[in-house]
Image 1 (cartoon, helix red, strand yellow):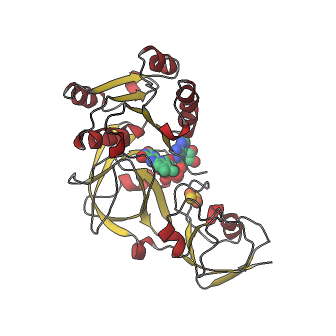
Image 2: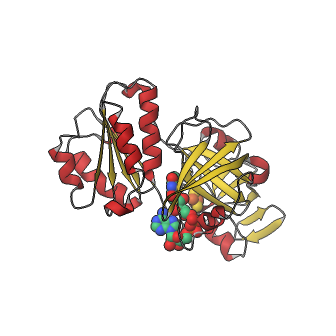
Image 3: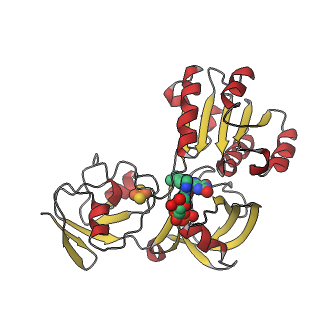
Length: 311
Ligand SMILES: Cc1cc2nc3c(=O)[nH]c(=O)nc-3n(C[C@H](O)[C@H](O)[C@H](O)COP(=O)(O)OP(=O)(O)OC[C@H]3O[C@@H](n4cnc5c(N)ncnc54)[C@H](O)[C@@H]3O)c2cc1C
Ligand code: FES
């Protein structure tokens, strides 16, 4: 049985067992959320980097791999490991809470002022940590040149992060790590139609990507289409309507599950050279892929971000 040393504790875990599951079963409280390699809350650092193609490293940057980081939820134990926990209070960027605004009954905008250099593009995601045990991924709903870093957060009744952050005050510190994600504007798309399909809190990041595109001189059409359960469940509708009215190349539409596919077809929104960015719940992202491919978009023309919850 491989021996695992984590900080100052030692465990023997069965060969080929999942590292996160094994450590949790041994009573170690390893932070985690999605369990599918996307949120980077289960980061551990090995004294020796794993092979580059190990699944535990496949969603990490080359720099993270070189430093020995791995994702415990994607690691199957095949050898002895000497590991160190990720401590956001030491290794992540502190950020002050500068505001929280209620956007809907169950959605807030959280605004932060990072206290260190943070390089990111609108639409990428970060892990927000309240302490060394509680981190969650959120997508960036602001531009680097904005005064504050912003996120749209869904509040879940049992949500460990979303319930606790609401009780925190301006001026309190949280921690930021792991900027990642392919859903952001690329200046190479400057004259191509942009199709931004959002559900729920993905409105924030996709609106930020559209603002970024305009700022970078995008000359093609930009269609922001928001899926909502009902008119009452949407938010920012008035603000987005006014914003779209100020930009002749922007189309802003709302729709729902029963009308969405038809709307894309009828309005001829899926041009052959379009770039489509699809963000929201995993089910929404999965559902939108087929009509986009059926309309002739190639795989490289569709980028997505699924807002995976914790298990
Ligand atoms: C790359 C990435 C980007 C993300 N960006 C955003 C974002 O911009 N805005 C945002 O609001 N969320 C986003 N998420 C999702 C967010 O990280 C999760 O929803 C997170 O689990 C919420 O944390 P919590 O502590 O409030 O709830 P948790 O304590 O994690 O969950 C408590 C309970 O709430 C319910 N729940 C939590 N999350 C979900 C979910 N996503 N779907 C369905 N039920 C859920 C479940 O019943 C769960 O058992 C993103 C996720 C990923 C992986
Ligand atoms: S990446 Fe491992 S729990 Fe999300």
